[in-house]
Image (cartoon, rainbow over all chains, first blue to last red; front, side):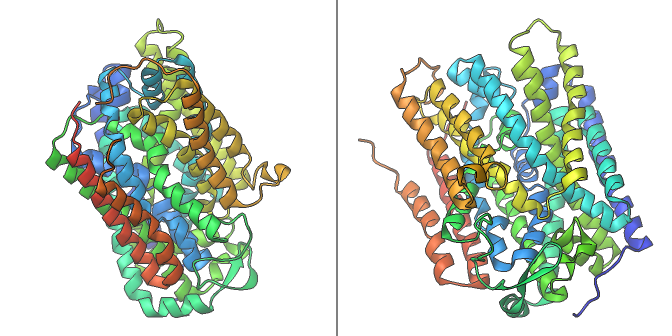
Length: 511
Length: 56
C-alpha cells in the first residue's frame, strides 16, 4: 500500500464547503436571473427556446453524466475490476451521439406546443391517453434512477465533512429543492451548461492524475492478482483481471449475454432518457457548423465517465480491497473516487465534491422537473386546461417535494451497495421503453399509438421482473437475459402491434 | 427499395466490432479500444445528420 487511505481533515471539509457553496452561488445566480425572465408556466418549463449549441451540448453532458458516471463508475471498477468497466460505459459515446442525432427532431414538436416528452407523444399520436401513460412510466423509472444520485452526493458529503449519512442526505435534498424551485428549465439549462463543464474538467483532471499516480502497467498487474470482494468484506478467489467476472447471473458482466445487454443498453438509453432528450425542447434552430460544435462538446464531455472508471482502478491498485470492509458501509467502493481525491490534497477533494454535486444536482434537477411537470402538465393540465398557469406553476413546485423525498427515504432505509449497478436497472427500462416510443416514433410514420402503448406497458411489467425485484418469481434470475428481454421485447411489441393496427393520420412531421 | 446509406452500415459495423475487440484483446486495449470505436461511431452519426440535415 503506497498511500494510506485518507481520513476527513478540517482542510478537506473547508475545501468542500467552499467549492460547493461557490458552485451553488453561481448556479443559483443563474436560476434567479432566469426566474425573473420566466413569466409563465410554459417559459418555466422550456425557457424561450433560444438556447445555443454549446449550452445544449454541455447541458446534455450534465444530464447524461449523472452521479453514476462521475462518481459511481469509480466504485464499479474498484469493486469489479475490468469487468466493472462494462457499466462504466466504454461505449457510452455511441448512445449519446445517437441521442443527439435523433433528438434534434424533437424541436419540431416544441414548435407545435410540446413542452414535455409525453406531450411529444400526444402530438405524434394525437392521444391524451398515451401522454398520461408515458408520464406515469417516466415518473416510476426516474424515481428509481434518482436514488443513485442521492447516494453519490451524500457519499461525498459524508466523506469530506464527516456528517452522518442522514444529515448528508437531508442537506443534499434541501439544496436540490431550492435549486429547482427557483429556476425551472431555463435556470437548469444554463446551470447545467456550467455543471457539464465543471464535471468534465474535474473528471478528466483527476482521472489523468490517478493514472499517473498508480501507473498503467501497475494497474494491469494489480487487477490480475486482486480478488473480487463482496460489499462487507467477503473475499472470493475470483480474479478482477478479466472483462467477464463470474460472480452471479444478476451481475451484468457475468457472461457475454450480460455484456451484450450492457452494450445495447448504452446504445439506447441516452435517447430513452426523457431528461436527456428534453434538452432539445429549448434549443434554438441551429446550423450545421453549430451542430458540429454541439457534438464536439458531447464527445469531450462523455469521455469523462471513462476517466472516472480509471480512478477506481487506480484506487484498487493503491489500496487493495480495504474499502469493501463493513466499516465503510453503506458507501463501500463508491468511496474510491473521493478518497483518491482527498489523497491528492484538499483542493482536489473540494473540486471533486463540486463536480459530483454538479453531476448529481444536474441530473436530479432534470429528472425531478420531468417528474413534477409530468404530473401537472401531462396528467392534470390535459384534462383540466382551465386551471390557471400560475396555479400550475405553483403546483409543480409543490410536487417537487415528494419527488425529492422518496429517493431520500429510499437511501435512508436501504442505500444500494454499488450505485451504478443499481441504477442500471432503471436505465434498461428507460432504454427499452422510450427509445422506441419516442425516438423511433419521430422517424417511423407507420408507428401507431397502440404500438407505443403496448411497448410502454410491456416495459413496465418487465421492469418489475428485474432479477433483484420480482424476477425470481418467474425464474428470471439472469440480468442479461432480463435486460435483453426488456429492450428487444419492447421493440418487438412496438413494431408488431403498430403493424397490426390501423395506420393513423399524422401531421407532416417526417420529411 | 431504398438503398441503405453506407455510413449507416459502417456505424453498425463499428458497433458490432465491440464484441470481437473485447473478446480477443485485454485490459487497456479493450478499455480505450471501445472508446475509440465509440468516437468513430459518433463521427459517422454526425456525418449522417449533416448529410440529411433538417431544419424545423
